Length: 546
Ligand code: NOJ
Image (cartoon, rainbow, N blue to C red):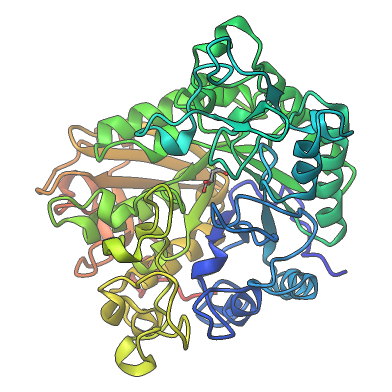
């Protein structure tokens, strides 16, 4: 098994750019309208190892395990295989090898809180109260009034106030499902469950994966019978045992070299989030949903970033992410007043220049908005189809309605903008979102100050988020205008008068030497400036791609 070359000075994932692939919607190789693993292999050149590739360091693949697809793969029926819709184990092995050949690390999704109700463990568990696997799930008697054991409601049924418990007539007890009825929660208090689940990690580590994204970490270790538990909402909980479980996961990863765990820790409180990281013996990283859910405001982002950095000193490490398969895309979420495309460029610049590891959801590099999903095309039980629309690789005028994603009928409609935002259309356009992402990722890779250097927030006045990045004898300034009007940032705190404008989100802006005191930022414009008196090379064209 070939593995990527180790990074000598720091763990590979610190400062990395990780690209999330949602396999159903990335690339379809067999024309059934659903993306698959061979499709992903066929498009790896878009990501790394080829001329003009995006240049990301790693991919995170959403689940591709056998699944009845009630929650499109987050209902796992076998943790150690591949759903035939997506391919085979041999395809997974080939994908790992092909990624590694390009220097790309591979993270896969691990869903420890619940299985599918068709997982053989649950089939056994529900078969009788005496089954050896009965206690692998969370079973309770109903309440005295004949209703569910407590008032918890399932996450997907919040509006309808559906219970998080379902009665199983065969054994006259109720099972817990924090999510859909088809996703029974595992009982992590049972050591056999822990042992079996940790073995599923080893199965994939042995096959060469570089780590895991761990689903809903905050749900693990549920204490159903804790008196306060009965009133609380399971999803927002953060059970004490969750950290202990993450330590066990870490111990498994430590049996191998250079593997990594990033948790989906969906708590909207950065103190609790940081507490998963500061001890340095559990998760390496955790997705920060406070950041992802921040409104479009320089002040709001500054508060969130500053607070997290204060609460999460080393060995904790920051992780920034603005979109994934569960959230409206950046261009839509921040684009209510028609400024989506410009703001998406500013957001990309922030994501890729902040100190930390950046997670990028497929299609963001193309500036995709959410797709319009007509009622008859809705398939998700929680309204997340718009951000899951397939990737337009080629314009429909050239490739047909499947836009190079599929030769068949796509499982979800593509975005209306497929013609203009298709990857092949953006390929040679220096003004495209794709070109901006490539340059940002290139610069980050080539500039130690940006990749892993120090960071200091600046107070640059209203609507401007500004920070310095320092390392290897260089200092860079990032200034991002969140207003849709021109702003003159106050850069007196920077301490130098000159710099070189290396990148602007505005393709019309001229790059080159500049006097900081005279800098005006255009509406929704972000810039990257190397500080200090410019050298001879700073007069010339932008740095060439690697
Ligand atoms: C979080 C995943 O990102 C989401 O897609 C899924 O529905 C829930 N966890 C349940 O597994």
